[in-house]
Image (cartoon, rainbow, N blue to C red):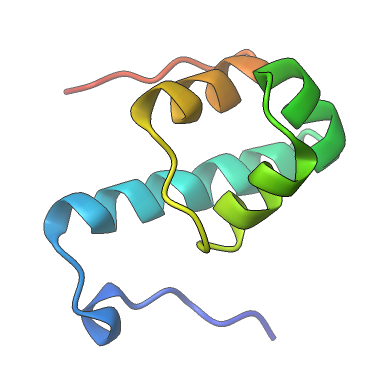
Length: 80
């Protein structure tokens, strides 16, 4: 059973929480599209290792990298 992310347990700022939520959404979308990390990484111009670390919340990507990952899945980031 996959654990649910609970930001309060980590003591994260609101900004960090939003970044992590976005990363989780992007990973879920990649899986929904049945795309591999390698495919998305190539399209986003990053390494598969980088994408793995991002999805495993071991690395905090820049907004540019997050946008590149989204665009690699034909998605757009929209700020409200």
